[in-house]
Image (cartoon, rainbow, N blue to C red; front, top):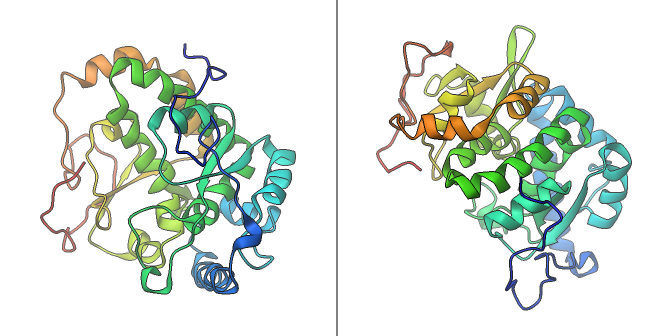
Length: 291
């Protein structure tokens, strides 16, 4: 098993520490940047009240993310660490996979420190502080989801040795970024890519175009995904406890070998063995390739 305490990969950017983190420089944010956070926060919370998983809404409240302006990571980390032992650290941008996994394995969530501009309010290709903090951090206050994220980081470090990084990336994409969860007779959103997107918060639950399919670990790890558009398929977990058990109780080495003998699945495909909650029309689908 890879040691989470091992040194980070060499050659971080010149302004970064050995673990690739940088100061958030919270005092340097402009009034306009704080106003952008407030605008995004108000817009998302206005529609998420009956759409988001209760644990996420509870996390927003517990972490006082509604106090106004971009959160100070030092203060946020104090509140979060008291709840689940996690902290938030700034990084200069996207980091290597091993760096990302090692931070997760050590219960640190790395976040971008820049915020989108008004012309990017609905879409930007690289995660900003709103996506990372509003979208991801609230659920880290939930003990079960917090344990899942640490287990995912540890599994990510092992996946590199098996050449199975793409498989595990699909698990992250269809859960942490674009996951849905059962809530009584209905569905709620919890994935950060949905939660931080005004349009996808509506599309994921209401639009007839995408499939909504019960979560199955093997199925998810065979499924390609879209990075440039709304998802063709969303996978629905029964609970965070179930997701954590799947991660802790699965021996991934033989699973990776098994998956290597099976074809990948297109994002829109529905199998006879799927637990179909909603079979999508795929009316929104467009042709570009998937990952």
